[in-house]
Length: 96
Image (cartoon, rainbow, N blue to C red; front, side, top):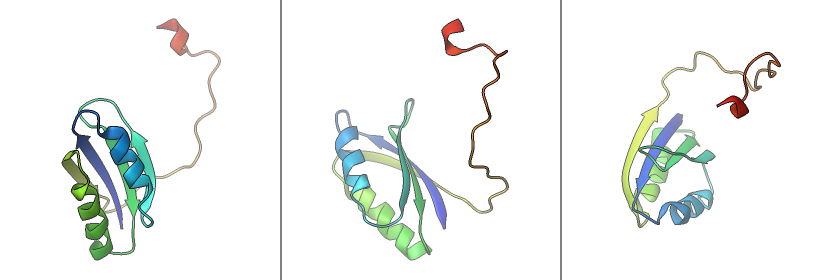
């Protein structure tokens, strides 16, 4: 089972919550600090719904967590594990 969870934290709690999520021993596959409406993006991989609920409830219980939005992957349609090679003819960030 694979989910992506978006998390909103109270002001000044993002780093503390980030650290607590890193300490969860099972299921946290990737963890990102993000900009915009949400503060963290958590990719969770576990064997079943029961274990997933346990991890999500643990995250919800952390001080400073205001909201969670969880997206459950129903079917993976494409995956590749490499980034495309840079095109030397395309503008770079320095052009902005």
